[in-house]
Amino acid sequence: MDKEVMNVKEIADYLGLHTDTVYDLVRDNAIPHFKIGKRILFSKEAIENWIRSQIMDQSENQ
Image (cartoon, rainbow, N blue to C red):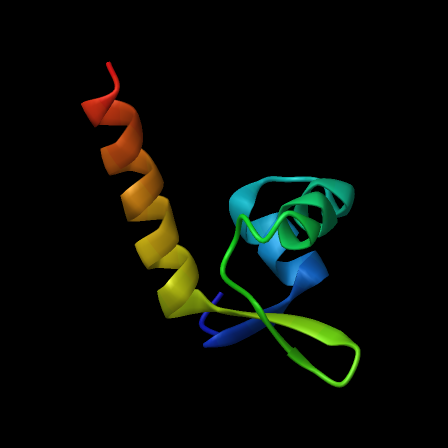
């Protein structure tokens, strides 16, 4: 997937999550996202940085 901006379905596929889980993360403001109108979108770069920070947080807490 070479897209720089992804929608909910694409980010769910990219992360291996169900779309409902992605919506929950968005609702809780737990995943970086932005909106254009009613569309929820994700920057691939922001998501990759978020994943790295999640990994770092987990390794620090072990």
